[in-house]
Length: 262
Length: 297
Image (cartoon, rainbow over all chains, first blue to last red; front, side, top):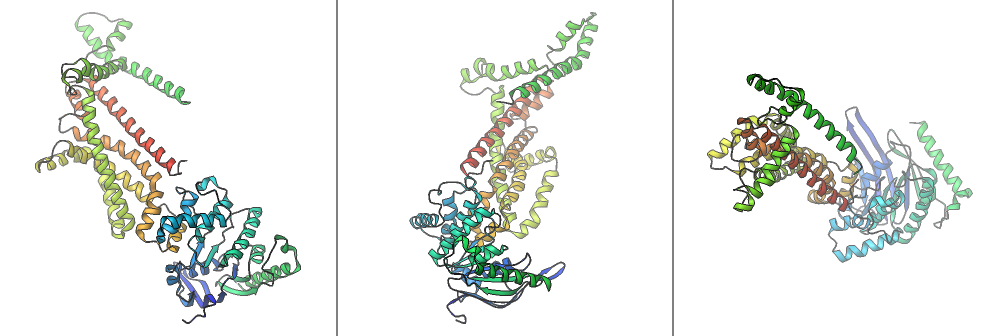
């Protein structure tokens, strides 16, 4: 194996060019990144910077046109077939015709778990996202925040080591978002997953991450990678500490720099 | 039943217009008769006569109602060939003809729905079918059904198929189209994110069909079934016109041959009632299914 085991995700000089009617679009250019086991990595940047595209490349939903990208030492496609990751989209995307339990069972049914195992796992992940007792409810009976938690439970149900999240809380209001961020950190501490998290909120990125990847558009590229000095234990009021503000400042500087030379 | 008032108002308005029209349309014949007899008609006599002719141009509502009553309840309970006396439906009763039409409609509806769903699945999953089938399906609906129905019957008859099946096929010919259009739209209704989600699970096309596309298409499916079942009925009636072996269509045509306008109108109302009942049944199944699926609006 080329990639070292402790690097869960490793990108070397990754390019992705979309051919469109208006000519080629460089969605990603020369992306180099290593994500270690158990890290919480946020991707932040303005729209069009390729943060979602890079996440989709890791998930093998897009294929890079250049460079090498490995997930768990495999190609993204192989990693997907090996159920390496769970993916949480911007919208919860729960099936309206399935209950919450039924929605979480969906990947388990597709992957061929037996009935007892399915029930077991559904109960376990519902408890993990604090939705125990909602198994028989339909999605429309839940609030937006609860729906998104159910979709996280769905991504956790089959024990993937990696959790990829594409602006999962983007559509929710600030208070719900704070609450979910806190819960997400607790969940991360309990499950020790490796998390890739796309956001456009600086406080969210700084609060959650051990590593913040700042990106800028045209062409989509990484402008700064910040290893967070914040402790793993993070109460919400950590956001008022000088360390937090310093990191947030550096992220903002990185975003501004990317904007100027664009 | 909040809309009962408006519905009754509309019915009342229609009845008034109908009576006025009946008097107007039948007046000429009444005056003609009076002139031959050398008498003069007063207004009330004129109205009375126009509403009680045996072969009016436009039968009055009460005449149609009486005809419906006579050819259903009275015929079956008191008629020599009725259900009570002979043990089987009378060939002179609307119930018998409606049943013939209904059975052809149901078979045609089943064939049409099945064919429509299969074609839709083909169109969604097969690129060649996507490019080729839809224009033909649309072209098939631009041909007047009255023109093609006799040919279908003649062709099928020449290979020994007659009776219910030719009617059912004409009925299916009309009803498959809304199902194709609705199901193609329904099977394609899941958005890119939903499809991406299944890709992250490495789900195959069959799993995507059963777990996502088919359930997602149900609201579209029922909407097209409502159109389809009404079209099926029209198809069955048209299929009965050239054959004259019973059914509401045959009844309509026979009525027009013999100037039995009340019989025509009675058959028309029977067809309309049948259509309303069929659409109502589909609607009830729709409501029940979508509620159970958690998709009712």
